[in-house]
Length: 289
Ligand code: A3P
Image 1 (spheres, rainbow, N blue to C red):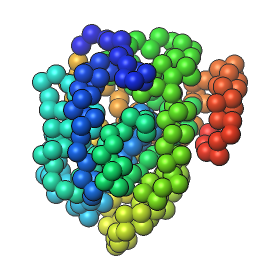
Image 2: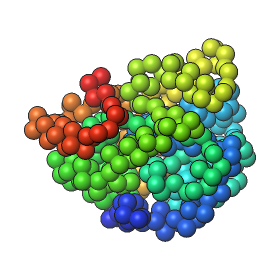
Image 3: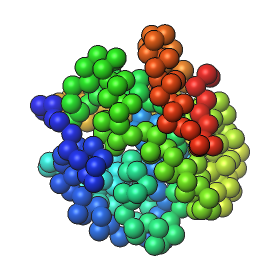
């Protein structure tokens, strides 16, 4: 697969294929009991989806695998040649459905709001996001060439990566937090205390679960377990699309890896940009964990 330049959807950089499939996404008919899992890329989407999928299956790993249609949690805006689109997969999925998306809040199909669907958003500190994204750009060939890390940092800060500005994404969804239907989580909290975060999710879903089942879910969704699970680690995707020899999809799964990559100057530049673009927001990120 040749590397492609990104297309654009209402000013947001996006893969050409997804842009072509947009009319189908925009017309998507959400159901009132759909649960939307929303994230900016590289913020723990796969991890959170796996946790929710297992919660929906009461921790029954085998049943969860049997029920899976194509991929575990359908990706709303997914569109690729010779594959069913995310919307087509979702139409075949029985309720209650989990729906995964990276869309910024203003591009979300109206039907989710109209049906009062619950949303769980997960955000991750931008320094770790940009490092994770840099490796993802290298291994996942639908992205343009990322260049050097220094170049990619500038592309990221300018919002010229797939799905656009990280700031606008995390802040846009944060503004929706006033609405009771949205639970806003952080990757760093999930790393520090997954038990507590799963309890938050269960309360939000109005679901009770025995401690033993929660423990089983946490075991199966630990980084080590997911890394060796072909249903979760993306290794079944053709090598032409994702080359795990360049970087595994489940790469490190830690907080603070940016410290192994940023130079002092890059860090200062990033901090300055961050301060300027987070002015007036009460959204806080843990970079030093
Ligand atoms: P790293 O590249 O920093 O390792 P997404 O699913 O949104 O694309 O996010 C991918 C990031 O989440 C990767 O980060 C990946 O390793 C991390 N991740 C996936 N599963 C995880 C888990 N069970 N625990 C911690 N991190 C996980």
